[in-house]
Image 1 (tube, rainbow, N blue to C red):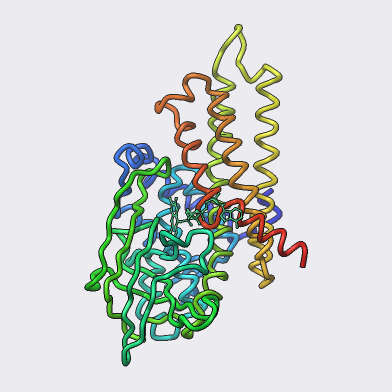
Image 2 (image 1 turned 60 degrees about the vertical axis):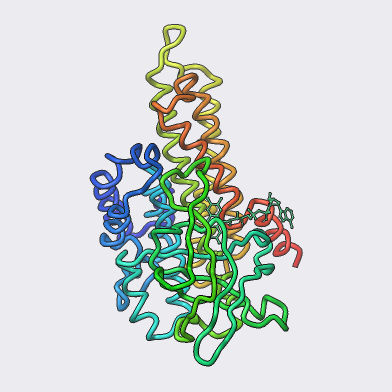
Length: 380
Ligand SMILES: Cc1cc2nc3c(=O)[nH]c(=O)nc-3n(C[C@H](O)[C@H](O)[C@H](O)COP(=O)(O)OP(=O)(O)OC[C@H]3O[C@@H](n4cnc5c(N)ncnc54)[C@H](O)[C@@H]3O)c2cc1C
């Protein structure tokens, strides 16, 4: 399948990324989940290696390798430990946002440091009363001279506590529809008035930092407004498309690992004096897992290719996310089944894959919301 989408630049990159991850991530992949803490040094190394930069131009320290390279890198990281990839994702998204909507000073001051992993990012949209309905956010930014005062709260924020830059979506004009009255600001971690907590554990993707932000009269210079005032909803929608492709690739990375582990286990587990892979019911599982995964990756790389040729991918990114995340949930459940009792223990990775996979039907816009988007585009 890669032959359809990869060119000569992708193969050596894939080889290099695999080698790097084998040394840096593979040895600690279980430790990350057991300790429920990803080492910041690992994330910095991934950044230093240039893996935050495929969507960032070279002049801002990116690698400019494009969306297909980004999806491939994301799959490779996610095959080993998806929590590492989920920690990288906000940096990719804020880098994309800043490059597309930021001004020259912001790119010089911030984007260059994001591209190399020197600074870690967070994308802050969700609130207690605004999850699927992002237009319902209540956090406000009130202009006072040449600063804004930010007040409100955010929930479920990935990288809360380890991020240097928090990109925070706020309402700047309460007199218009929030789609036209929303703006995004870059807030630095030590800003007075910013309180961060990590008050819960997660079902999966253990190792990521996720938490809440309280914003109490945070003073932000107007220089930290990204794009025009009122353009926050538009820039968020553009960023969501990239998020959906990233989360599709993360789902596919988990599925690739679950399928590989299942094939290995099925060939080596002997019951009734035969490897279980010789039983037709197990073969059917492997065949269906491989076919669904192929379809999920085709949808994802197809959307990535369309993005590289500057096509609108709103529908395609949602299709890829719906299908890839559902496929990951199905494949990882079958992987546990193929492993029998072993699959239900933490000695094997498949139980982790199954818990990790569920997140991708929720984060970045739920399956239900993606289906609404697909239907809206189809019915236009
Ligand atoms: C681990 C994790 C990491 C996250 N990271 C971030 C982050 O970094 N930044 C950030 O801003 N957010 C983040 N989120 C939040 C995530 O984007 C939201 O959880 C998600 O968008 C769903 O919102 P909600 O949880 O409020 O669910 P709700 O919107 O309350 O939805 C509840 C249920 O109702 C369904 N539903 C809602 N509206 C409709 C409708 N119109 N039609 C049909 N069904 C509907 C949903 O599909 C879902 O099944 C994260 C969440 C998690 C769990």
